[in-house]
Image (tube, rainbow over all chains, first blue to last red):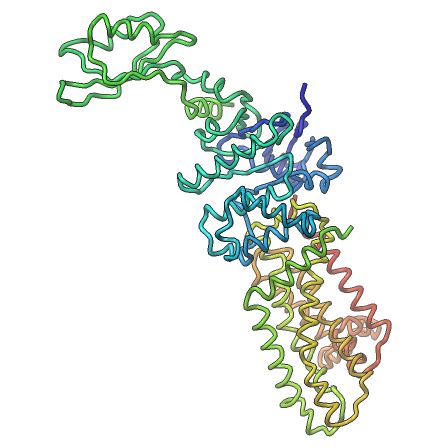
Length: 330
Length: 244
């Protein structure tokens, strides 16, 4: 069992008075995060992601339960926890009237970094977030992408072992999202197994596939899944499904033929297109749970000499799994 | 206990000067102080080498100027969400409160110090009791601190700087009027003398009057110090209440 950097013990937050029941925003959430892990914390808006992160970072007091960071209990030693965590709050709030350099100096100052140590720490954070060009511009005048990078630089200036990022790519354009993800991946690799634990919340599922080693999904304040992204995708009805675009000879009942293959659950019709080779049919063949149907389908296609334009085996669709897990809970 | 106070102090103080707030405040403060002293107070006409007319208007000047220095202290943090950033840095709440308060107080002190030409003027024209003038400055500085502490406390409870300003100005007005003769007379008409005295004892006007004339009474100093302490403790309670 490797050392754990973050441990949540039945962490619970109830808003409003306990007599009137109030709103149970976070309901006994427990999990552990080991060094080297990048944990994607998923859930619909209002599921309790931000509230959970605010409790782990010591901003909100839990109603019951607690969280440990590097062995320190956040309810007993909040300052000790804050020293060890780098935190990007939701929306990356910043002091708009300061320049990134002034802001990072302030953060380094509060974190007890002085003189040459502070300078080295700031230089390193600036280099990793590529802020060199805007250091002397007021934060107010920066683009959203730069502002987010300032927020990230602030979170890593003291090289914390635990990074907690609340929706680090929310509201950014695709290029900026890509940059931020690259940054997170780079930070995750630093130090390898003895390295950092990163928790990031998101509702963008591609992000989980792109950067996370593990995904925890919560809905209505409770954990509904805690798996590797690949395992999560395997839950999808599209896992090992085969998407086809082909031009069969006129009059062929290809859906009927495909449905006859053992292991096929259903065929989704995606419509037809007129091409120079005739009518192109697009569909996705969905397997029964656990069946592998790709070989049978290619066998059928070869046997009938259908002209295939594309054939792709799907690994699964996270949004599909996400919807299943987060909506049908009573 | 006060962990993070110096870092917050430095940031806040620099913050005043990175926006026009500092310059606008200082210029308006100095102009008004001058107008009140020379035009309305009649410093020259009185023919006395002291700063009575200068200090006499400070309570009224502070009524609407100093709350403007305090209004953004916490309201701005609530509004922009930086409160979450600040409170997840390894500093204590008391440190953050003191850092902010001391920065505002130091700034007010700097503005007050920039009125030194008035002091130079009376020294050129006559030979005033400089000890008394120093006492007046100390009193004025203490009163500014009390207003700022009230303002910081009001600012902690709201996202809106305007609301923080209005609440502070109304509170300060209350503390001023408590010793204003028409108000005291009004209470004297029907309330028992002990109540009238109690109300008057909370007045910035009576507390400041002695010091502006050169008498530093420990009770007056204790009054302002206690008021600051109570307000800043309330400030901490309000922040804690807003957190949960």
